[in-house]
Image (cartoon, rainbow, N blue to C red; front, side, top):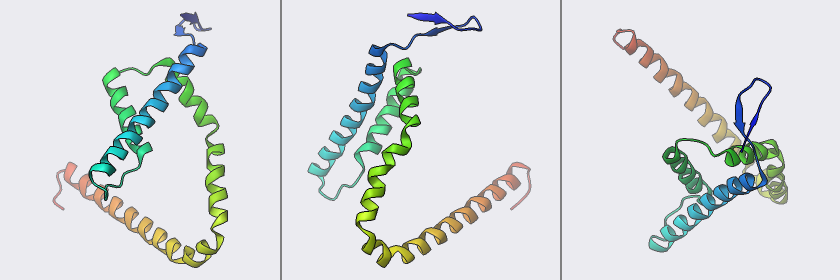
Length: 140
């Protein structure tokens, strides 16, 4: 099904079925990622990898194989991004539960975060400058 927009272009119409299909793709990729990680943990108990990240990699592979974004998946992802801030509420509540632990370990973690960020920025700028010199034909 298509509909004409004001500029005369035809766009696929978003239907409840296409939204459901987009949501099913997201859930199936996450389930497949969690399953792969669980199998990895069975084979090697020291295997540590987040299931949702594996699911996102599977989604990336699916989209690369498909070579076009399904309209329902696009609409569902856009809708989820619109309410993304609500998804952080459980994390914030979890952090509040561990206030004492955060007070104890917060300053060293904050220091590590600041130092690692500064080092990352310095290495990134250094890499950029070195590559810029090389691309201009200068010697480093």
